[in-house]
Image (cartoon, rainbow, N blue to C red; front, side, top):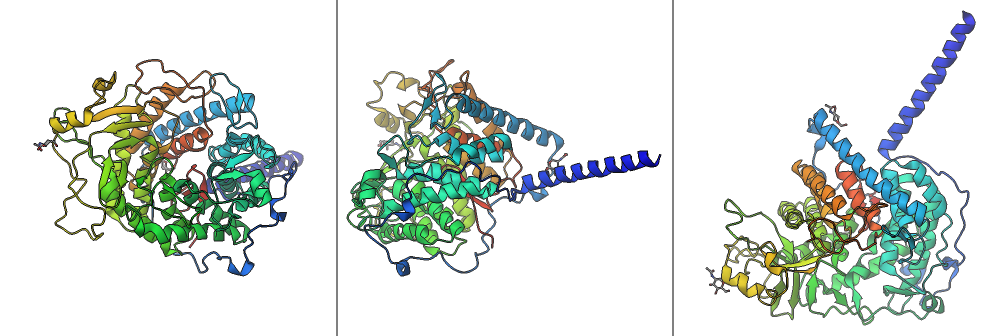
Length: 604
Ligand SMILES: *[C@@H]1O[C@H](CO)[C@@H](O)[C@H](O)[C@H]1NC(C)=O
Ligand SMILES: *[C@@H]1O[C@H](CO)[C@@H](O)[C@H](O)[C@H]1NC(C)=O
């Protein structure tokens, strides 16, 4: 008996210990606070030490701008207060089932990559081969790390970390790299995976890469060119570009700031703070004050005199990063707030538009939606091109986040109108997915010049007000594309589809995710699920998921045999998170870089 009792006691103790461990693991899992430091084994430093390189244009230690000092501010609450929600069991089950379906899609994609393209940049989802389009450092490998972690795929995560710890940034397959892409995918991916897992080797690789990208700032005016030529940098012959996109130069601030925060070395922050000063200096002096032209002359003192403006390709994340950098800096740099508020004010006046809906389609009420177009301005005449870009669909999230952060409730509403605009566009096409780029007919705008004062006088008409259908205007706008085959069958008010592809892009679900977390509106969950099913149906291949040639295809779509790393990094992550509990990667604790990599916001 005694022996039996003792055995029982031992059993109980062991059982108890196991339960404790399991509970601890689950709790840690939930709070993302695992002080992992899994393994240093296998760490191989890069073959070129960028930190030891001598600068051609040195910066004195004393002239570096330090991170703003002081305690992070208490920022306004971003997320909807979900604590009072009474989730039913049915709701919980639906969320769980949808989440699992997204995870299955991610596992399928990851397995295709793992089996057919391990450590390459991408897997081709039809032919199932490896492909290197981002220097061959393993773009999908690094870009997927945090998604694997968030989805609880820890075995896969550890295996990926082991491969990442051997990346050699000096052994790429190209003589140049894109500063922008390398920063958002590789550096952002490493920093977020480190912030989540605290796996030290990830920070080590991030610092190696950060040192390399920091060398891009070794130019006469300390502004980096997007085209990073390894030879030119090593020779000290690098110059900023005369024709640089604002997205390239304006989307470094989150990653470089986080790198300074994590390492305590201010030089990365100082480098992007210098860029910020140029944006700040020129914001009111462009041909569309408040915004910057898509391309600037970074070589000649950051001249911003070009005439094309917008928030889609080559501009987008320059705007996205303003409010997010403010947040990451704990609200201690007001200039980011000012720049954001001025930029969105100009967007509301000139860039956003409301489509003109045919009354016969919507006898009750037209959809309450907005889009962001392209603007041409010479400083006096401002012309809006009512284009619809999938890339611009991030705008809904940007407006809503900024609206919460800066107490601008109207901007949350605009954000919702933009996000629902993209959902509406998804619903207009046979695949249930919107095209890369299309054109529409917009409600006519009251004539105004760009120099009109920023204070909105009550007499000035609302440029975003709804309007009645005008057949004459529609015919006028539709002239020219009328002969295009198929354009007649386009759902009004679309007038043309300029690029019918869907490239597995995330921006629409990104904004729906942000809007759900901010407003708590549960219909957005069904919207997201509808989008997910449509995307899967249109893009799934035997091995993975593929970009497609034409969203207007009825039935079987033609595949492009391409699956960029952002499919797992962004699209599937946002789908997974909207079906997760709202405290998982809370928007009050994390900011997402433009590749959907969450960076931890310092606590107030
Ligand atoms: C649904 O999930 C939430 C969050 O985990 C939980 O608090 C709630 O009790 C669940 N509801 C039911 C009915 O199980
Ligand atoms: C419709 O648009 C045409 C062309 O811009 C314009 O001349 C006409 O006044 C508009 N009609 C209405 C009813 O607004």
